[in-house]
Image 1 (tube, rainbow, N blue to C red):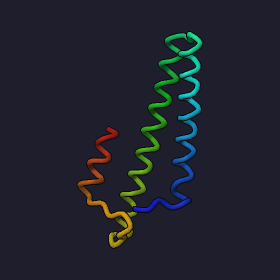
Image 2 (image 1 turned 180 degrees about the vertical axis):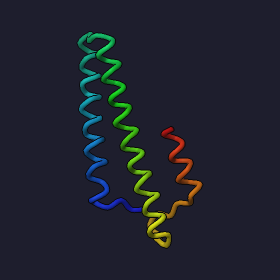
Image 3 (image 1 turned 90 degrees about the horizontal axis):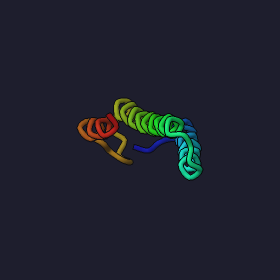
Length: 88
């Protein structure tokens, strides 16, 4: 399953946002930031990564349904389910 430029842009945006949030967490820990602030920021990073993963899997599922003959990166329904469950 190949991800198109249209599909990848929102995923990259989410990952870049997560990267910025993770940098903020690292800086807060290094500078002795408040525990509450660090945990809230860390939860935001985790959520952004989960959403990026779900978006990638969702795209894969859509592609499998609309183009089952695509042989660039074939995935079975079982493989997609297993990927989905790794994020759940």
